[in-house]
Image 1: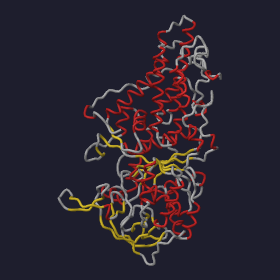
Image 2: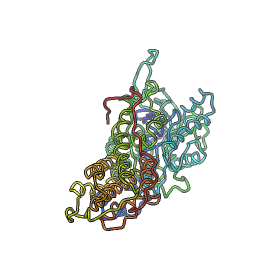
Image 3: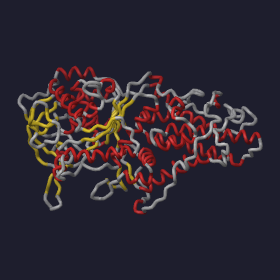
Image 4: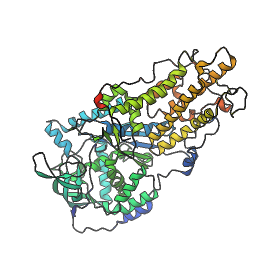
Length: 616
């Protein structure tokens, strides 16, 4: 996460002392209220499109009803380099990658940014303890994240590190804008601070507990980390002025935060007054960070520093404007407050556009327990790739991960999902209709409207059943259903819909048992070819739609079907063209080379990882 695994809280209940403090809104703030953009709503035409059939013989419109879309910038949180990557980091990354790939599949202009957050007192202390230069320390861990993303096929277009010069320039420029607009002032912060979480905490967020030696200490209620009382002369941001504007933004944009439960949570937080926010630390305490412009005694607070990365990757302060209207943040629920309250308030103060959407996901537990080093249950994705493959692990996370609720990980669940859906249902279907026994000529078989007419029972030779026509309808509308699920940040539902259609196609193939047909009989041969054609067409659609989730396996499937690289976009989803009396460009084409099973069945080797049931 942006501060991976952290739980930075707000400063509600802490004391801020300054001369002449006023709670009134500035003229700038009042102007901003009337300038809030109305974004994030789903146009009615898109919602109406969900669940209806595509026009006969045409590819889905991919949103053409609402006109050209603005460029999209998809972002993950930038990940804190205090620890090596784990399953939670990868989940954020593959969610963002799938959304980005879906945008590209739909023909939209998009960029995708991820990276590492490398400043803060915790990093400074860790580097000192390791007798290592802070930048070398950060570079080593950042390289691990980059390697993970490359191995897991995360196709970022920009990898940002907060120690880069371009980011330092962006942060200092942003600070000067906030200062010049009158939203920063010098004050005294007094309250609790958690070094591991890089978080200011109020009394209500702190509890007393005994340490390992029986001593009473104060700890963060959320993270359990020890806190210390801090009193500093810092710069404060006038966050309290923005509460009405934030509420107005969320009221006008009900889809700004997704899923809906997190939108309601932020609105609930904003029902109470929010205090001003400390946005700097004294330089003599925190040296490893970006200095405050024109004040050598202060360092910019790591959260403000980190959040500005989204502007840095957009080209701020010079070339960011084209991307600012289409920003989609993917964040974990533990950092929602920073992205849904602090970040929009900073942007409002700087006169910049707000994110189009903030997608929030929940966490992964392991065998019902929170991941922790002390329990020894932290899941290393790189280790799992050697067993499940990168695509297999991506599929599991996106298939089983439900953003609204925490999900439980255990290896037996991974094995069952991948065997049932990738090895058996999808891979088995591909193998059956492309094997030399069923398809000796190794071609994309022809389709006969005589055998499978447009309407049931129009021809005496029709062997198609009512179930077959229902399957055709569902596969025809599948692309729009999948697009709608991606728009609502419900990738797991998109995969559920695809898997349901795959099962229907297996049922279709099994029902008509083409292996029993007599190739020497003209009618049997025509029907056999038609059954193969329908199955191949279904597989082609599934392969195209699965590209954002399992890019390597989808490529293998489509290559076997001889679908070229330039024939895999959204506009090529013209399912069963011959059924609609159009030309099918694939009919009669030689199949691609047989590279073996699409996905090998897995065997459980470690009984300790088994579990009878999971949470989701």
